[in-house]
Amino acid sequence: MAASKPVHVLQLYPRDMNIYGDFGNALVLQRRLQWRGYEPILHSYDPEDEFPEQVDVVIGGGGQDSGQDKIQQDLLRIGDKLHRLAEGGTPMLMICGLYQLFGHSFRTREGREIKGVGILDLHTEGTDTRLIGNVVAESAEFGEILGYENHSGQTYLGPGVQPLARVTKGEGNNAKDSYEGARFKNIVGSYLHGSLLPKNPAIADFLIAKAVENRYQEQIQPQIEPAGTGQPVEELTRAARATATRR
Ligand code: GLN
Image (cartoon, rainbow, N blue to C red):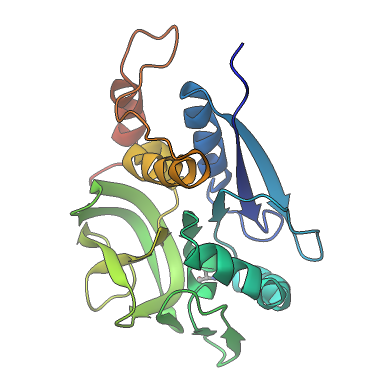
């Protein structure tokens, strides 16, 4: 039997930052790594936990403002480690609440300043309006991106990041500029739950491709056919994408 090739996936703060099915992102990475013959090892990290030694992909989800309060100090505590990983090209996916906290700051509706870890050049302002609903966005890198947003914080990008996509339905980062998410190095930030990766396998495969390139200097095949299904995975994901209504 071929030697196993572990790929370590770290989920940040699942206790407080994990809503609207964000855990689905971990499951998709796990399954798609297995389909390609890698051995996914899922680590969850909550405040005060020991930070794993080996990390190949980092993911983080959304949460209430109160959840963001709970993890903020700890996020700053592990900030150096996350900066080092980001600089070294570790792929990361940050959704909504953690996307906001990967930026410089989040000023809540009540005017409280939650300091971010500053990996992404962006900042967020709490508002009285919630941006809620299904989102369709166009990305040159990943094609059409589908998801669901629900946030009162509105995010503005600085010159150090690129937008992930441009919304054609819904709002994305804020109610003004029609950008959704951010791209920097191998990091994808996004407001989209749903969860994001089951509906958008191109993003999942981007994260996986970067992880195995960094760790094993291997390229992944773009097309995969999960054993026993007789169908390319794109067909299997069509059903998941169809559940994201375009209304
Ligand atoms: N609490 C943040 C906001 O409402 C994040 C919400 C979320 O993660 N869905 O802006």
